[in-house]
Length: 127
Image (cartoon, rainbow, N blue to C red; front, side, top):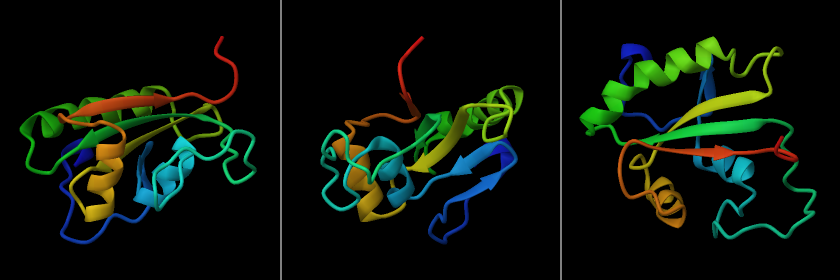
């Protein structure tokens, strides 16, 4: 989807292309601090969720033209911020809300109703 690429018919595996991460349900649930099955918030202080960086995620659907329009800009922002590199404390990702039943359920739990939608997941104290 990003940078003029289109996703195939296979399920998304978590991977990085350039400065963008293509997130799967389990990886996004981990970043959000929610249980990967129930999508309920993990207990505060849980050692299961220790993310040491900020994360920005763009939620999309393959059929949505606005998602395809925004994706190259999202990729360019990730490149300019050096997202996912040692020089940055930010990971930027894409998440297909309609790839599977689990991905639809996660997006519903997050109240994602329109595409594209973005969410910022902060790590540590906000400065």
